[in-house]
Length: 476
Image (cartoon, one colour):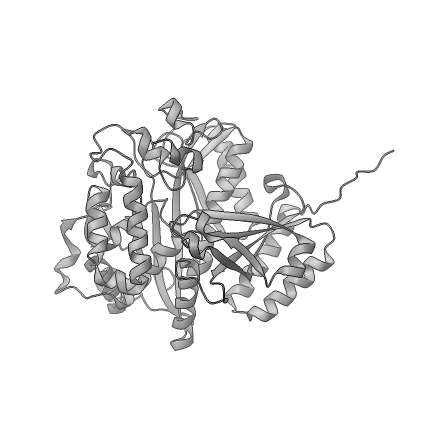
């Protein structure tokens, strides 16, 4: 009998979950970077069945980029990983193109071999300048550093849970092929909570949920959403930077699983006319030790004065924040009040048209839910901006800001103007990054019809930052 030539790492799902949850717990315990690096490099050297390490980072718009490094090369060269930043939208200019990657060894994941292929593991990285300092346009580094400063100052931790909706369409690369087809094809028309055994949507949800569970997400529930072929898989809250990493992993898992089923997982905010769009409702709370700083049983809607101050500051910056939370032409179709759109700049415990909702909670679960975030928003940029706005942003003149006298912009051009005019966001992002982001959004908007109209246009899909590629971008 012949033996197999290749023996690559394949770990059962129950063991994967244990490994990834243990690694997550060590991140939450703030194990030192040196200890994390030594542990992981020792593991990679000892585990002979690993062939490659997938190193991930994101651009300014939140699009995931991945490089596969041969394991033996990475172990020798982990302190000198470079790439061409001028090839990444929103990063360095051609004249100053070389950037570095600094591996965040604590953000290490074991991958389901049947989804990602055997013999590979994944780790996140931070983008650095040539001298090794944090790169100004890497919002993951910004968010991580800000959260670390909060913890060092007085032990404050920001907890986040994202509820990410998406659509499942027939065929491979349905988004990239939309330029030719002009339509998406549903795989299911069952609607909210409704699927049958072996329905392709249910098969997809089950497979993706199993994969994210194995990667340590701490799943809570999953189900079809309101619109046909729409899905949502919820998982528990965690520290803000880990939560932002999980948003990208969630979308990566969904896209990978869908592709294996000859389908496309789409996170366009409003891919189909006439049905509900997709959101990324973001639940946030602050804790110090075992104390939830947002809980007060006698406070309005169970929220503490700290919690309400956080909400009021976010609402006061709502117009400027809108572009960060709704970063594409297509996102403004979702802010249509006919489809439960959270486009009112107000806070409410019950009105789902509010930008911020106050869910029912207790001393453990009290939180605020920012509902106006689209699923194509950069999790690092949006969480960073919301966290800083909630803690440091300008306070409103009075609490009438909670009543919804204003609505969010209904088009990307107004959102860009509001963003550019906001001095607080310019300050926390830095003038260069602030303007660079606005220019990226304007460049995509100018390739699309200025007026949305009632029908989704090919251009708003083709030039969407999560869809477009070099070939599509040149077809203008």
